[in-house]
Length: 143
Image (tube, rainbow, N blue to C red; front, side, top):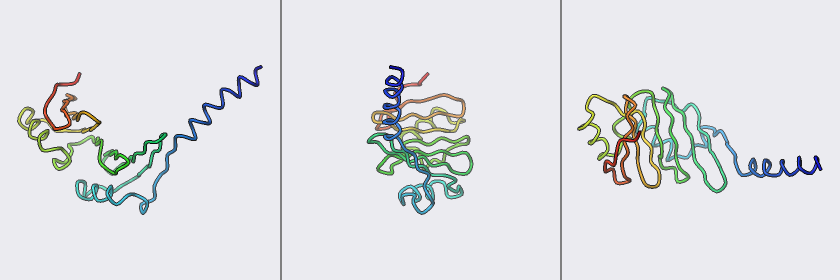
């Protein structure tokens, strides 16, 4: 009976590992849309590592740049998340959100930006998190 329960415990683990995989990409394997995005918005930063994540049917790309900058792209190679220890370039922040932050928090910088299905979120250098709808309209301060 112990052997059977041990085998039954291994089956989900084996199934999970088969559904999830990560692959470190060589420089020539990084999708051109991603390298173009990096060179456009972070021209001084070199790509240190790019990882293709597959989890079930979803796929994403995690990219680490010099200067402690992390980017995440979806399966269509569209940016979904940016995180840095220093101010993000204005060019990566949607105009409406950037205008709101500059008008209401002129002495603070945006360190993180994230997009999901229904909202966008930024974190400022004072650790304040602001939430916006997909169109960039301010919703609330996230606590």
